[in-house]
Structure formats: C-alpha cells, structure tokens
Length: 192
Image (cartoon, rainbow, N blue to C red):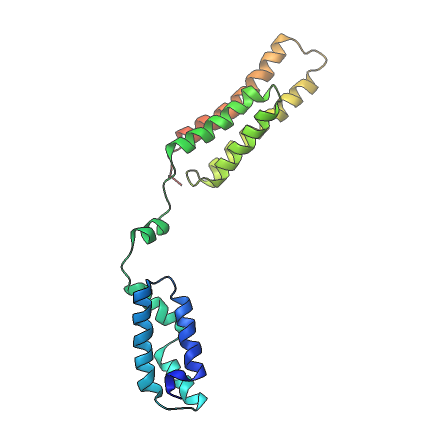
C-alpha cells in the first residue's frame, strides 16, 4: 500500500473533494492530483498513522486548502450576483405601497380580498430589502391601526354617531394606510 492509499490520506482527500465541490470539475481534479503527488512524496511508503497525520497536518487542514483554492478562482458572474444583493425592482416596491395604501379605503368594506391584499402587502414589505426596519415597523403599524381606529371610533361614538363622526372615522381610516404608502414610496429603495 502506497502513502496515498493510506486510510487517513483517502479520508483527507475525500474531505477536500467534498468541500471543493463548488470548483469546476477540471480545477477540482487538478487540485486533487497536486495533493496526491505531494502526499506521495511526503508520506511515501509510511504506514505509521502518527507519521501520516503529521504529514497531513503540515500540508494544512482540508478547509484551509479549499479556502486557498477558492481565493485563487476568478469570480464568475453567478458568484458576483450571489455576493451582492440584487436591487429589488421599483415595480415590487410600488405594488407593496399600493397594496398597503388601499387597504384603508377598501378595508372599510371588510371584505376577504382586502384581508388578502393586506397580508400580501405586509409579506412583500417584510421580505423586501428596500426599506429599513424602522420604516417597515411604521408602515405596518399605520396599516394595522386602521381597523382599530375604525372600531374604536364606532364604539366611542356609538351614542352620537352622525355624519360628521362617520366622516372623521373614514378620514382617519383612509389616512393612516395612505400615510404608510406615501412613506414607503418616498423612501429611496436601498437607502437602508
């Protein structure tokens, strides 16, 4: 049995091959061939596990070797795209703001599509990278405050609920989510 057939060496090379799976096949094979050649000289016919371990330790850990190979690889467009977060489309940001902004007016009807639009709008808001956490919290609070304000206004003003009170409750119910939408649209995307 040669040094490269030693169980410690085969485990070492298998670990490197697994960790280097991101490399193109040709580059990965070249790396493994270089390591086998080096280990054939370093380990030779040695069978003593301690001597083999020492040779492997001198060569470096599999993760260090793979990290060095990664550093030598030229960046590909896919790697560059994965490294930098994509700017989200202006359309998505507009749709999010419109969905949240119209829930006030449409929400006064209390229909199921309005609830669905509210949920979709909030999901789009919270999964977006276009706004910082403070803006997201403010928009969520203003949007969700609408049903609370309408219900509270109706409850507190039930005894004398006339046209003026109705208009005031409607105005506040529409203004809160509209304010959230305007805030979202005015915040520069990516200015987080």
